[in-house]
Every structure is written in structure tokens, then in C-alpha cells.
Amino acid sequence: MKSIKDRIEIIIGDITQIDTEAIVNAANKSLMGGGGVDGAIHRAAGQMLKEECRRLGGCETGEAKITNGYNLKAKYVIHTVGPVYRDGRHNEPELLRNCYENSLKLAIENNIKTIAFPSISKGAYGYPIKEAAPIAIKTVVDFLNRHSEIEKVIFVLFSQTDFDTYKRVLSEYI
Ligand code: ADP
Image (tube, rainbow, N blue to C red; front, side):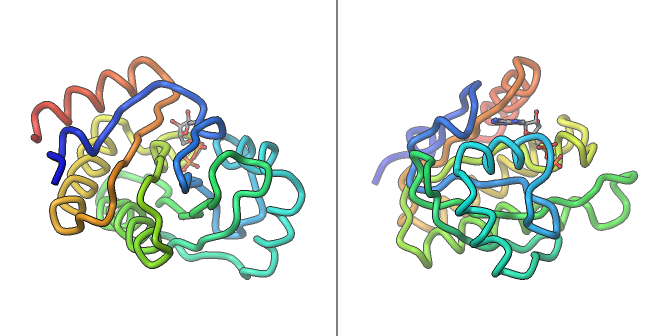
């Protein structure tokens, strides 16, 4: 089996352009679209995504739901709802961990082997990157160690600072 290093990639880019089998959306509880990466994914996927999302009836924080990808290169979108950051003492770390873990579980249930994540909660939901990055990396690395089914996870960052932070955290962790 490939090493963890070969199964994780960190890049700067636009997640709507990534051709993994699934991309993860940092959605809100309504699943009806919003700003940031959510808006970008809905625009790129097209109206059909909104129609499928409407039928899902929302999603709780830390949970994940799957839809088709429609006009995206990715076949599926996994929608997960990150915690709104208050001060880090309101269960935010566990809820953020759940987002990564539940998205990966859903991937396995749907036979998905390649998946891309944005930095969940790092935008409008205000999670500091220095706290969010170790949670994202550690949860994914630990999951990959337990589940050989997932071949590749790509973290798609939207800024140089976020990219540098993820790179540093990964090199410290594995
Ligand atoms: P949240 O509400 O969970 O904080 P946001 O969409 O506001 O979600 O932000 C999550 C992260 O996604 C932020 O770092 C933001 O810069 C980034 N982002 C925004 N658009 C894209 C995109 N097209 N591809 C990848 N990341 C994106």
C-alpha cells in the first residue's frame, strides 16, 4: 500500500475545478447554498444541485450528506456543515473533526476513492487556520491509517498562508 505521504496532497486552487471523484462542500445547515466555497460549488454544479439539496432537508453541524456533482468534474459532492467558531471551547474542535470523519465515511460507503476538501469553517465561520489545520490533517491522516480504501485526499487551499500552514502541519505530523 502507498504511504500516507503519497495519499495526501496539499495544493492551492479552486475546488470546483478538481477532478477527484468527490469534492467536499463547506455548506450551511440549510444546504441551500451560500457564500464562499458553497456558492462557488453551487454555481459550477448548476441548478440541479440545488434541487437535489432541497430534497435532503438540511444537515446538522458535523454531519455530512452526499449528492451528485452535475456540471462539476467531480461525480459527487459531499456536503458537510462546519462549526461556527466562537472561542474554541464550545465543542468546535470535535464538530470540525466530525466533518472530516463523516465525509470520509460517506466516501467509503459510496465506493469513492479520491476526495478533495476545502478548509472547512475557515472562511465565514471564522475558525483560525492555526487551529483548523491540525484538526483537518490529524483527522484525515488517522482515518487513512485505518482505511486503505481511500487512495487520495487533496486539501485545496485558497490562499498562500493557508497552504503554508497545512504544509507545515503535515510535515510535523507525518
Ligand atoms: P465556512 O462557512 O465553512 O467558513 P467558507 O466558504 O466561508 O466556509 O470558507 C471555507 C474556506 O474555503 C475558506 O478558506 C475560503 O477561502 C475557501 N474557499 C472559498 N472559495 C473556494 C474555492 N472555490 N475553492 C477552495 N476553497 C475556497
